[in-house]
Image (cartoon, rainbow, N blue to C red; front, top):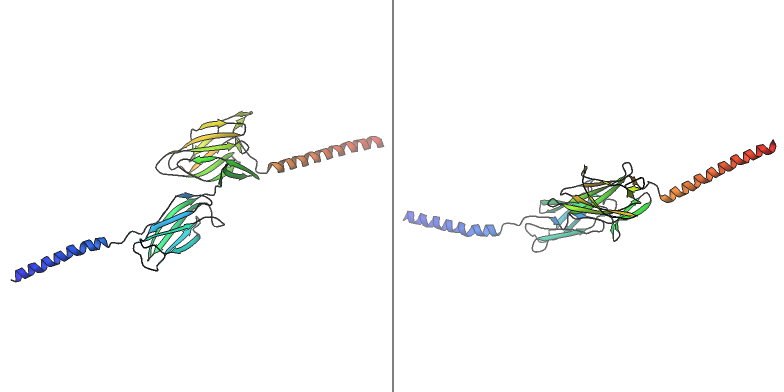
Length: 275
């Protein structure tokens, strides 16, 4: 009788475990996640952040913190998740703290934290191309990168080059199309066009010049996955001071030379009269 009673107790215990286990699996909390709609952003673009929280407690908000490339807090916000546990934030980058580089986005909820990163570039794109300002002049360079984004540029007068910082995806190669204004950068020798030199991550690469006019030269450059930098080297770049200033300076020098020459002539004539 005792053995039968013990068997019944064990059977009831095992049955209760079988009933409890599915309930526990069903009530297992969701993962705490965070993601953005893109990896690379430029000026005036809205960064959309979203994710899910493990459980939803009424009245408890998700806290978001954004840190710029210097690890300085750029913005902070709070928002309640919806009933499904989904939360989202929107913000833009600009102003003095909105520098170019990688930003860290952190969200916190019920003592747990998750984070992700985005890249922000400062290129101003217009219908005429990317706006490039240098030496008091403004140029518009139409450009596109099929496997990523152009983040920033730097004009180097020492080696007559333009350096493009880029961000590319990690799964596919692409092409960088850029139309260069001759007034900004050119490659010539004895009034004859020469080939530019193009470097990808410091290594020389082949490219194709698909269009050439009296004012522009268009290049198509293969860009491998993971590339960070494209350098285009010519024989000349625009001077660091404005053309107007050059003209004014030249006129001033001509005036000084004329004045000096007239002074010399007047002195000669004066000596001749006195003699």
